[in-house]
Image (cartoon, rainbow, N blue to C red; front, side, top):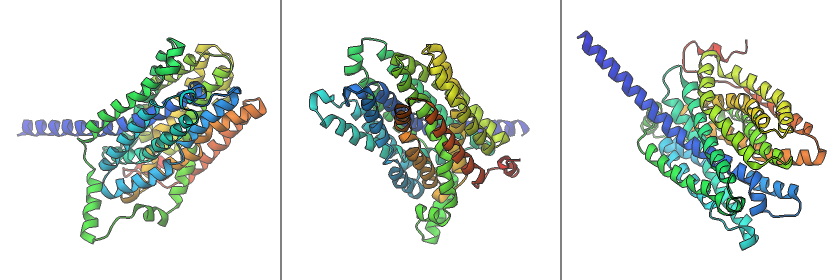
Length: 445
C-alpha cells in the first residue's frame, strides 16, 4: 500500500508539472509574439522605416517620423486592454488570449506587405499607421490575460517564477527579431531594404498559428471557474471595470509602477540602436547587441522571478529602478565608443539586468494587486497605460531631446524622473501574496 501511494504521489506531481508547463508555454507564446512584434517594429523604425516609409533629406526628421509611427501603436493599447480585459474577466482568459494572438499575427504580417512610399506615395505611411494601431489594439489585451492565466495556475510560493517565464518568452522574441534583422542586414543591402526586412514580419503569422494550437489545449483556473459559478448562483453579472473604479488606488499606482519598465527596453535598445547608427555604426551591430540581450533575458528573467518569491518583488523592483537610472549614462558612453563589443556590453549592463529585473516582476505584482473578477482588466490598465504614456513615446522623446540639446544628459534626467515615479508607486501599492508568511516579503524593512 505504501508503494502504491508513492506511485500515486509521483503521478500527481508529474501531472501538475506537465499542467504548469502547458500553462507557461501557452502564456509565454503570446508574450513572445507581443514583444516580437514590438521589438521588430522598433528595430525597423530605427533602421528601415525612415528610408522606406518616411524618406526625407533630413535624417533626424525621418527618424522622428518613424518613431512617431512606433508611438502611434501604443495609443490603442489602453482601449485594447479594457476591451479584452473585460472579455478575459467575463468569459475567460483562454477566449481573450485566442483573439489577441490571432489579431497580433495578422496585423504584423500585414505591415510586411505594405509597398514603399516611392511606389504608392502617402498611402504607404497611412497604411503603416493603421496596421500599427490594430497591432496595438490586440497587444493591449495580451499581457493581462497571460499574466492572469499563468499566476492563477502557479503552485503556491512560485508565482514570481511562473510569471517571469512570460519574460523569457519576451527574451526569445528579442532573439528572433534581432536575429532575423541582423542576419538579413548582413547580406545585400538593397535586398534587405526592399524585401529582406519584410520576412520577419511575415513570420509573425506562423508564430500566431503555433500560439493558437497551444492555447486551444489550456483551460481557465479553478479560481476563475469558482468566481463564474458564484456569479451564476447569485444572478449577477461581473463588471470588471466598475470593480476597478470602486478601488482606484492600485489601478493608479499600477500605472506608476509600470513606467520605468515600459521605457527601459525602448531607451536602451530601440533608441540605442538609432543612436549608434547616427554615430556611424552599422545597423547590424545594434541588431546583434539586441540579440545578445535577448539570450541573457531568457535565462535571467526566471532567476529574478524565483528570487522575488524568496525576498519579495517590491524590493527587487525598487532596486532595479535605482540601478536602471544609474546605468543609463555609462551605457550611452559605451555606445559613443563606436566599438561593437563595448556597445554590446552597454546593452547588457543597461538592460539585461535592471530592465529584465523589472520586467520579470511587474506582471506578477500587478496580478497580486487585483482580485480574480477584475484581475485581467486591472493588469491591463496598469501595464498598457504605463506602456502608452512611457514606452510608446520614449524613443521619440529621447530623439527629440538629443537633437535639441546635442547631449545625452536630458535623456538621463528623463529616465531618472520616470524611475522615481516607479519607486513611489511600488512603495505605496498593496499586494496579496499567495503564502501565509509572504506578507513580510512586501515589506521595505
